[in-house]
Length: 250
Image (cartoon, rainbow, N blue to C red; front, side, top):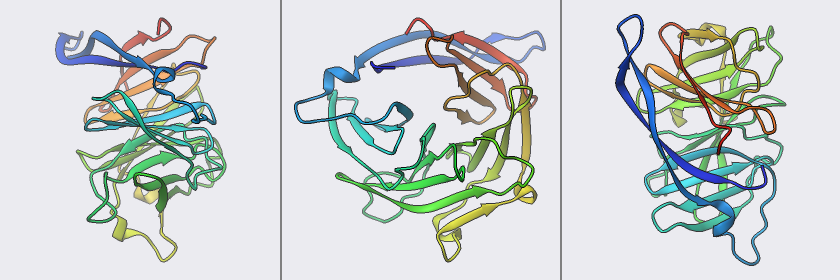
């Protein structure tokens, strides 16, 4: 998309009961904050399509295809920084903050960014005011799977999820979220099938984009203009789709 519109969706868990008597999330409202183009000043060049997006406090971080970072102050509505990272070969389809900081004086917790294609790594970044560096790389090594792979971190509950699979059966594979000190001598974590804690599969997602997992629910964006864009909400205990919300109007 040529224009980025930042909206906040208000999701109320427990606002509606499904057929099984369980409470499910309902999107009740959305608020337009601003367009990213409004924040751009002279001398700033955006490179790469907008991809992963994460929020920590009043700071939002947009990662673009090719690794450019855009840091936004949501309260002041200003663009705080624009810089490139070492993730120059990544599609950066997803991003999310963890809880652990790489160093005591780090500005933010570590940021988990999906490479998506290539080696399909999760790059773990330490963000600073004027740059970022990779402090850990996470792999899922499964010889039977060759497709693209995204990563979604559920920092509150201590898990990280690998998201991939064909349209006939997308999957979210859950792993324990490793600490920085768990890395091998090369700074890597290499998950295998034996490290998978659980797997949820689901269908109906045509063009996978970013993903967000919070406890029992997975929030799965789908599509790319001019194709329809949709937000799916998946029950992580069953793989049941609880809600399908059109984003095409934004």
